[in-house]
Length: 371
Image (cartoon, rainbow, N blue to C red):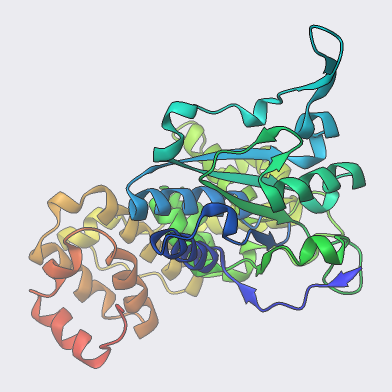
């Protein structure tokens, strides 16, 4: 086994770095077949597949061209899925290879379209499939079948579980074909992605309160454990049942199935405190002074206020921001910062805040907080 001796990188950074790398190489006229493939190592559920889709979206903006992702799950592939099935020609004088589905693309738009072929679970593929995948990665073709000429290669692999070190079973000759990244769970990247994808406020608030709950470090011991992927599933669950449960614990078994029993109990207990908080609407209207005392409740309330701004930005002006700031001024400084960092990505909010004298005075004391 080879030890993965790479620095950790967040999903947000791996998207930024590789989107920029691909766009720059293409912009310099480097043919796609000469652009070195990328492999992302990372634990289960950390967001590697999501990162590929984010790279696609970023490249579409950078290149102003359509980018298609072809997802190849190598653990469910046989070698014929990659190289085709041999069959005799009509005269039965030669062998021809029937084209697998992964090579189906519109040749009429080949010049105007870019492709990302994503080889997932590369490390778990059989030796024969890995060998065929290696030829595809090197040559962008297998036997007579070719990928489109504007093809970029990204692969993903999980580190070996139950090993003493962070290791991979991939061979050195295969590893050396890639630019390699060690993708690790990162709360800030998840928070930004969660805000963009409208994850449920309970999930966002709970993880804002305790970043360490984003990912379980004992994944080798439990069958169900928290990951960015499983928190997304919890968010989907809560949104699907919105208004149909009195307490989050009414969905206990469903939540356990995503994140495990211990984490589910902690999350449900936190949510019970969340529902007893002052209404965010009352804070912005200046009609409440009730303030939570515990750190987890304060984190929860800040999250609720941010969610309120996202859903009501067209109703919030200087007066509402002034009311919010005056309310938050009784909180520790890091909670105030959390609120303004949380709304900075909402169009027009910071420019509105800059018209509020109290906020401007606070910002002078914390000039780098919104960078």
